[in-house]
Length: 343
Image (cartoon, rainbow, N blue to C red):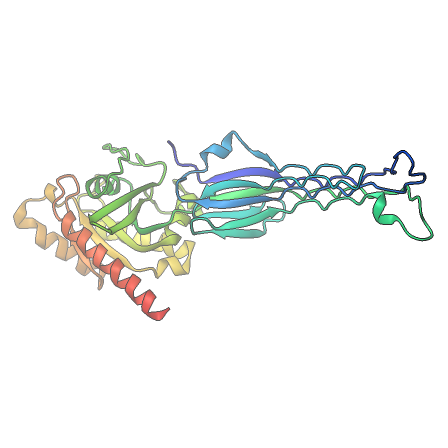
C-alpha cells in the first residue's frame, strides 16, 4: 500500500435529543400534570492512536464521521437514550489540526492515546422540569443543542528510532532491505522511493528497533524542490540519523559535497534537525578495489572534518551491515537506559 501522510476529514458530534411536552393522562387521575422527559445527550467524536495502522490511506475515501444523535424525551418522564460516542482510529504519530484555524488540537504519539475532537450536544429539557407552584401546566420545552462540527487536517509523521537520509540512489532502500524485512522498490535510477518505508530490525529476542527509509533529498528540498519538505518533516521524530553516502556517485560528484548539501537542507528546514546526532555511512564499497577503499573513505572523512562515528557498508552484499546494526542497537539501548535513569 502506498504511504499517505496527509488527509482532511469532517467530524460531527451527535445533537442532543429534544425535550418533550407531555401531560399525564390516566383514568381517575384528573389534571395529571406535565410528564415530558428530557432528551438524551449526543455522542462525541474521538480520535485514537492505533499501532496497527501505518497510513492515512483509508481517509481518502471515507472522509465524514458522525456520532449518534441523542433520542428525544417522551411522556411518563421518560428520558431519551444518549447517543454513542464515535472513535476513529488513526496511526500513531498523527498530528490533528483544525483545518479552518490551523490550530494544533493534538498529537497522538502513543498507542491508545485519545483526543476529543467534536463535543456532543447537550440534551434538551422536557416540560416536567418547568413545573412550579405558579406554572402547573407548562407547555414549554427546550430543544437539544447541536453537536460540534469540525473540519480536521491529519498529518502523519513517522515514528522511528533511526532515519536514513542521503542523495537519491545513495542505497537507502537497499540498506533497509538488507537489515529488515521491509521490501521497498530498488532500481538503478534516482527517486525510486516516493513514499517513506518503515522496517523493523530484529537483533535478538526482545532487541529490535525501527528504521525509516526517507525518499532522497536534493538541494532546495527545504524550499520544496524534488520531493520537498513533505518528507523532511518525517526525520524530526527519528532519534538517530544515518547519512548514507554513495562512494561513486553516478554523476561524478564529490561525495563530500553531497554530504554538505544535505546538511545544509536539514539546517534550513529545522535548526534542531540540523543538530540531530548523525552517523556517516559510506556505502557501495564493493564498487571499489580493496586496496583503494580505505584511502578513499579516509579522504572523504578528512574533507568533511567529520568527528562522529563512521561506518563502511556494501548494502547490496550486506558487507558491514551486521556491525552497523549492532552498533545502532547498543546506542539505542544506552539512550533508553539513560532516559529511564533520568526519569
